[in-house]
Image (cartoon, rainbow, N blue to C red; front, side, top):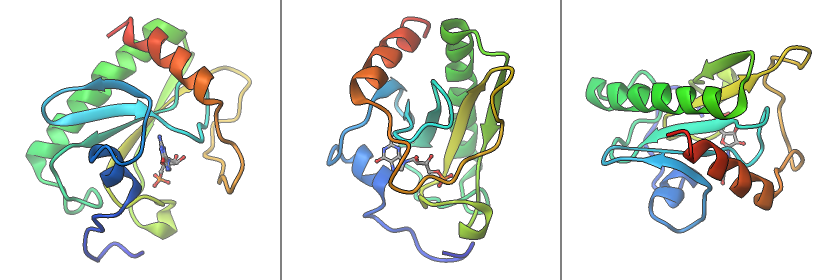
Length: 146
Ligand code: 5GP
């Protein structure tokens, strides 16, 4: 999908927001939701989305929704730091399939980074899924710091 196009109401994050598929939630408020990535790039890889914006990417999101998302990104980043003591935090956001975007509901990645581990984004296929029990335990640990 290119940078242009219409919002797909059936995208996986819309289904999470509608409660049609589960997610391991870290934090939510009136406007935003943060949850763990099912194919994490590192331990604690989190995603933040707007609950109400139908934006696919940075070009079409309402400034108000973007500000709400980034405020939650900072809140969750601080909790990840406290919970997991990473050496760095990679905040990333992809726009368009050619830039690596696979889910077309704007989302921001927060990826804890540790010395000695690769810092790129691996392209997962049908591999790299986290153990749901491990994600649940990790979410408890992070939520305790929020
Ligand atoms: P993108 O490449 O679009 O920036 O990132 C999409 C992210 O969503 C990927 O890191 C992918 O692992 C994650 N993802 C895809 N489907 C699901 C899902 O059903 N649940 C969760 N928690 N994450 C998902």
